[in-house]
Every structure is written in structure tokens, then in C-alpha cells.
Amino acid sequence: MKFIRTAIPDVVICEPKIFGDDRGYFVETFREDKLEEFLGYKINFCQDNESKSTYGVLRGLHYQLPPFSQTKLVRVIKGRVLDIAVDIRKESPTFGQHVAIELTDTNKRQALVPRGFAHGFVVLSEEAIFAYKVDNYYSFDCEGGIAFDDKTLNIDWKLAKDHMKLSAKDLKQPLFKNAVYFDSLVSLYE
Image (cartoon, rainbow, N blue to C red; front, side, top):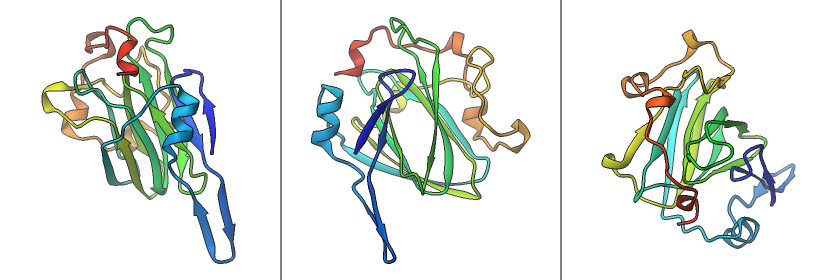
């Protein structure tokens, strides 16, 4: 597996080797020892999640605050999505910046989205099955969000707004300037 740092170095693309022939393919989707060696810190994933969405569904931008902040390792099992990670760590040199990564069932790429980032994705194919590992459990009381269309973030979702489908909750998320941020960089490594 190859690991690639993005424009925000804490967000990492995990690019697996795909072994294929006329029978199909084999791919190793997760290797804890190699990932931890690359990152320089331990990750203890405790839960796997999966969602199915149709074209235009936008989920996000979501995050969990301490003590339930989460690192996510996200991938697409079927379809194509544009995955977004926004740095919301006040002390970070990339605070308020985002990374966009296309994840598909053919490129098999994964995105490691660390603690201290808001995360979201939009489905660009007819349907997508999206899977992810998290290193902490969900807590309603620690849930946070940011408006997907906040102008200061300037995210190009690669889809016209009138084609997007959002939940009632995601349509009411606060602007970036009113969001609750992470106070330090420490939360990335806890």
C-alpha cells in the first residue's frame, strides 16, 4: 500500500495495490502496522460503518468533538464520490482549508481523515456504497457540523446545487465562522 500526503499533510490518501486477472481482483484494504508506521502514531479503529446513497446525495460536513472526536478511514465499495476534509483545528497552519479526493470503486483509494477535521462527501455516480472505520464511538452531544455551501470554505462539490440532496439537518448546519473548532492540534494524536 502506498501512502500519499495531501495539500493538508495530516489528511492521507491510502492507495492499495490491486491484483487482478480474468477471475477478478484482490486488494488489501487495511494494514494497521504499515499505516501506523507511516503516520508515526497509533490508530485503534473500533467500529466500521457503511452507507448507501444515490446520485447527488451530500452528507456533511460533520465531525465529533472531544472526548468523542474521530479519525476516519473512508472508502467507496461501489460508485464514485467526492470526499472532502476541512481542517477545523484553530492552531493549524491549514485552518479553514480543505482537501477534495475522488474515491471510486475502481481506484480503490481511501482517505484518512484525522481528528480535528470536518468531513463530507457527495455522490457523483448513480449510486454509491461508502464504508469507513472510526477510532471512537459516536456521541450525539459531541456532534458538530458546518454548512456545505459556506462561501469562506469555497468547496467545489463538482455538482450543481439543484442536483444535491441533503438531509434536513445538513441544510441547517452553521456557517464556518459560527462552528465549534478544535482548540489544539493534540486531538489528532489522542
